[in-house]
Image 1: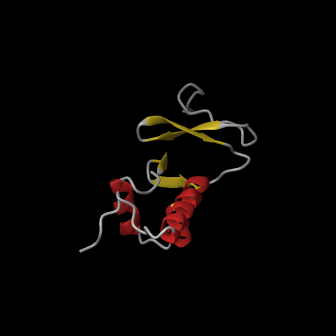
Image 2: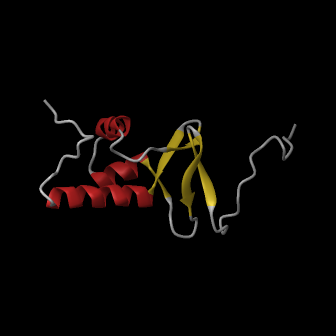
Length: 108
């Protein structure tokens, strides 16, 4: 039996100006512009940042890295613009002589 349209999620068209991104807490205040931004998966985030998987999730738990977006039951992604902004912040902090933000504890 085919599910009715009321039983399944209705996706916005790819050309729509803005779509709300849902995260684990519901609707996020972050606006996603389908024409300018894209969602990248964990492996690409790791390649872009140079972080290992465990470091990535440790920073998320500490609140030092952008949270992931739940894409499906088994898939998460990140907004590319948020990852780029995080990298820019790390570069700026490093250049200012403070490479470790207060929310990122020193490793023993």
